[in-house]
Image (cartoon, rainbow, N blue to C red; front, side, top):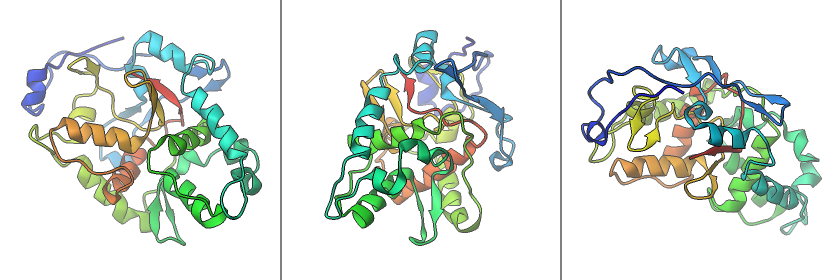
Length: 284
């Protein structure tokens, strides 16, 4: 694997100086269960305005041992939570006495859904993330309580839906009525936050492949979420990760499920169009 080094001092200077050493992602190939081939590198979408030539999964920026864990479901600790979600999928809840399976059948029938979220919901008149749509089903069709955003039940169910879409290309729509939300997300991506005055782009566009502290920076792609992080030994959602990143800039952050993070998720998801759905993944 090839690396470049970025010091903490460079981060404190808001990453304004270009890196002099060369490096980047490795050339390994991700095949899950010796069966599901995952596209982890793809030509960048024109939506990126030439900022990147290629989009690269975060899997390429992890060490060999971490990569190997994701290549076999028996070694991937995130799959434990998928199994828990399958049980919930088949359990009737709420005043209507319905389960997810009553409307949608087996989880495998949902293959491809994760690949197009977030997406515009015409009836609701808003862009919805996967978790927002899950909660809509719970409250409107099942008569059950909504799950807290990025709480374990919601993350587990999102991981289940991701798992049945592995190997399918991300294809998030950004035109039509979703365009306004996408533009808001793009603005957030390039806005500097906090005492460190860092934007998403400073780390994940201009300095991917570098080190910040002990972390090998990736492009921040979210095709592999939910992600099981070895750091906290649990599945992590996209919004929780956004919250952590903004907090690390020493800024007041937004809440999971907020309109700001919904917009940012739409934009960041679109940056990964062409990569395959990969979650639940394993990361540091």
